[in-house]
Image 1 (cartoon, rainbow, N blue to C red):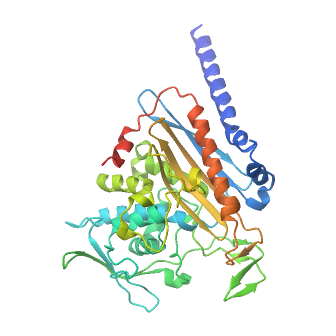
Image 2: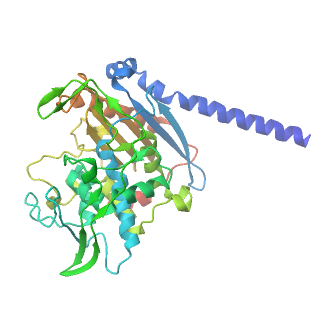
Image 3: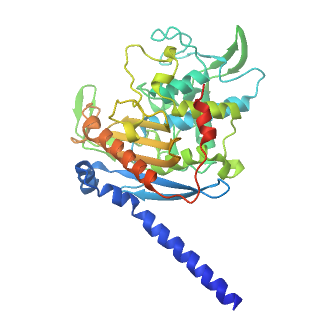
Length: 415
């Protein structure tokens, strides 16, 4: 009788599990089959837009421990896309880890950082004529990366980390579909991007730590990644597919798992966590979810106009209205070559909502690269905004067995 009871209990539990999974698999299908003309257009032309979406539902148990239900959508799931600025997230995280590992007395994310140049193609960062009050340090670069997605800030952290360090640390944590191998907006070749500038950290006029010039190992290209039907080079159209084989790689699956493991680091094995000081970790989280209006004025280019939606594509990508104070988006977005990506952990402190959502869409109607003719505003941003809003509305309405306590996160944003 006891064995029979155990069998029935196990049978019912498995039935409930598979029933739940079956329901969850339909969530994105249901959202994308709404009456949105834009959704219908993207769904019916997936070969054109190549959308990929990963949504993770988070359910807390009575102890507050999170349980994750991951749902993927898209015929092109797993296919290559250019990750653009999304690679700045792991670079920022690993720069904090490397600084911690240096472990020199008085060295911190606020230590003055001088990036020097040896070759004529390298640039230094002692003086920034566009930002005369800018103080070069790890903290400022991280704030620039998440507040306005500054490319030069990323380049400085890429040089500090080196491509070898990024490769080693990402691979050992299981991110096999990621390769961060070049600077951004520099027009440099593969050999030049292997060489990292010498860097010194100062306190007043005293050097705390010096990192010599370093040359990383060559990136091993595993496959030819050719897309489109042409590209612009030196002002001329080249009638051939564009080769992305020597470009950065960061699959949507790796992006999603990286962010989940960063936010919920206590749920993963110790050897997979990042070795970051608690104070630096809290600084990182706050920086990730801060809006341009909240970062220091000396980090902004006065000639640019930044709405709070500037790098928050999911939910607010094409909406310049003020974002509600209760909503915070811990994310890193990016766009280039017609690819538009966002990878976000979205919370609403007032309504006790939390979820992870990552998405990419390709908007390059003419299939020509480097012509600056992409449909970001017409299709890409509205699609990501509507997607984020619909998942948020689903989460608002969804019944949860136990409420989530987000007070610790919320405290990061209290004065």
